[in-house]
Image: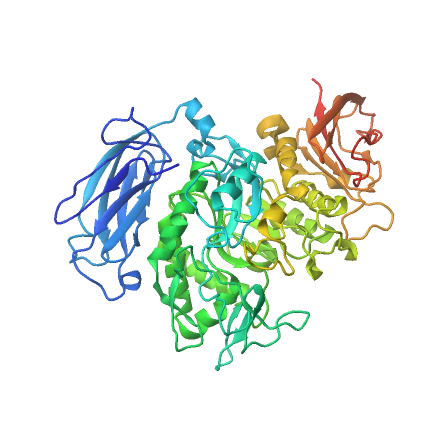
Length: 640
């Protein structure tokens, strides 16, 4: 989804539209496609000392069933841009304005355009042409704007905004396999072949650098300025011990491919980022990656910053105002893309290395009260430790939030109660597990039942697979994000350390198995969106003495209120169970599904007894994958 009709505007008491089509020659002058990002460029009439902090500009955009303000952003020098989409076919108009009423370059401009729809064939080429993702009708799942179900199949590339996964400007070979020197385009192509439609990444790491300071350090005032991922093999002379083996590493460096950083840094203040002075050049690099993901049909999970920037931000700046400004900058710059937006990467809430959930909630609520929700209706949430509901509450206490998540801790059976709790909330919000078990990661929080299996072993991949199906069938119907141990993107020329290189992690079998989860859930189209919790009707939900902190021995079931459709999953070592709550004396078709291979097995017909109970059939015989843990999924359909 490129910018095929680039609307460039130079204003001096008047407005001129310049439209240039790169991809759709059949469109007439002044026409655009619905849901395709458009851009208007403005030149301010005068200079500002700090345009990022001083200037707010916008367009009032009107079209079929749409009338609201869409904010622009400063892009360096005297240049401002507004990005928007037409959400429906028809006539659209816009009028520009700003908080600088005397600037003729930013005010009183206007224009109009006509939006036309995509053909079915064009939608099939890129699902983003179906419209932006939003909540499905019953509140528990997601769909595209045209009603087509969207089931998130995501991966964890948290540092992909930086040089660590570089943009190289050429397409990946059709048979590309990840290896050293991997580019952003090649990583996207690899995951697309495996059925992924999303990647999670953090937009900016303001003061992470391979410098004289430790990965985690506090300044002379006692304020912790970062709690970064370690740059293995690079020692910081002024660092304190930050690794379990007593190493004193510096932080992973997080500039873009040209060395740009997202904010200015005070050189005389121990590496403190100046959060009130942004560097647009860094975000121009990120623009390319967002556009490429849109072109490839991806719906990225875009986050603001990691929580460890919070203490320094609050200590030296007007935090609510300054943080809200940055949130709005990202929404203005990227809100015309199909994405899921995260207000903060809150993977952990330690006393020294983060602000509290309440402090972040206050800043995000401050932003919401000024600017309102995302202009084009995409989901808004955060990555979280445990659950967004436990951290922030629900609709009344966090008005900005429109999607719940769980993740990070615990990475075992205990997380499923949080998903079930969210599923029962009113009003209903979509939910997903964003940080489940990470294949190949040796860490204390990533050891179900105390185990640390060999990387990419059958047991390692099973733990990831069990969390895929267990999370979705505990109410996470929005989709699932695969845990990739190389989330820090240790890159070419660096030692791997505690985390593998990205190209190694991308080849783990669990990633390839995510597409089987998608096929299983979508096997009856959008019917999965009507599923309700039904594990209470599984007679043997847990085997004898199962480990709640493990990932063996549980069974899962969700079923529609009409009792005509159910999806089930049986972990390794799960027992055959009696399944209650079905229509007495009705006939059902039972089909086993192999989550390791994606194969559907032979169908069986079963008659429910007079009390509404179905006995689980014998588990399938093992075939060539008999060395793997024996987990199975199944589908039940009532026969009319």
